[in-house]
Length: 377
Image (tube, rainbow, N blue to C red; front, side, top):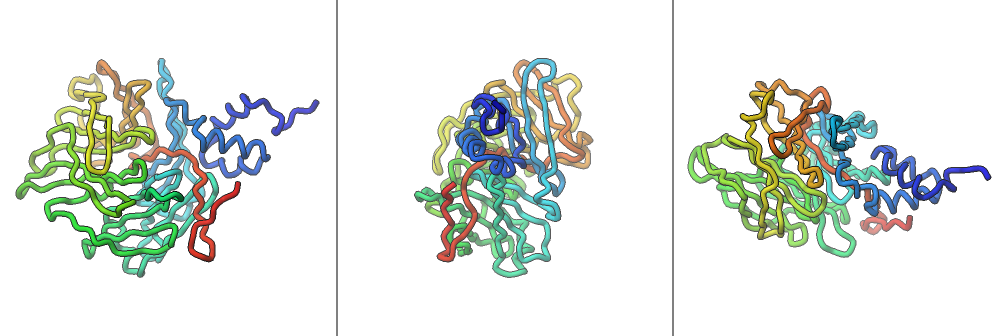
């Protein structure tokens, strides 16, 4: 009996699918019906992502989007990385990258185009170019953005934007393919961090600065609820950040699709993970504390950027931010218990954004009624 792709044992198919690069998922779906069905069960259903020490996602290096697979194996060869530029974005200079529910939201640097925003489903091979209200609005892409969805049955995905010119807020609905102004206000003392939002369970969480007095401020956390289309109250953080302007670095990240993690670097580097989180309340547990000054061979200058928490290995992967004094371009550091740390190279430049990725069947197509088409495959 001749062995074909459709007759391979299920266990072997599962192992192959677990090793397929993100950018090859679309081609895999057309291989055969059995493989298409298996890809949905394994990749979309979550079997492939059950390997907790394998982190798959997209990373922004310079203005190029790359796929990245990071395996934390343990032993001498602790980390194995695979980074490849995504050809689907050739010709686009990307400045910001967001992920929600299997969709990528990208912001382009091309200020002379009426289409500077796009949403992509890499698994289905679908892209939605989002038209600005006017060409002038393409110059406002330096404001704050967030990506999420409401709690309706079909999950209407939405984009929140802070209009950097007027100071107001507007929201785009993928279902209606339209923008609208929001009647929401924040206290004048509260400022959203431009590159500071992540999506968790459909809601967006911002790192914000609250000005106490001139030259003195503190970090806070703020949720935008995409169902109510409103901001919640300021959420407490598990560390004291009150100080002079420019002191301390705060970064937020997601731990799988369940929890939020916060990193704070000042005299030490600390990581905390939420035990409970809702738009108006949060509680935390400490995950890791690192005294960078005691690490033998660690760089004198390091400013923490995006990070990945691996609870199984009890480590955190931290990408550095680019500064004039930081010569660790393209390096990332892994911190663990008892003073453990190591580094690895990601690319020629420090990653500006990293977002984990789980493929999904969320379609970006729109029918003539303005509703997103449901997929029967």
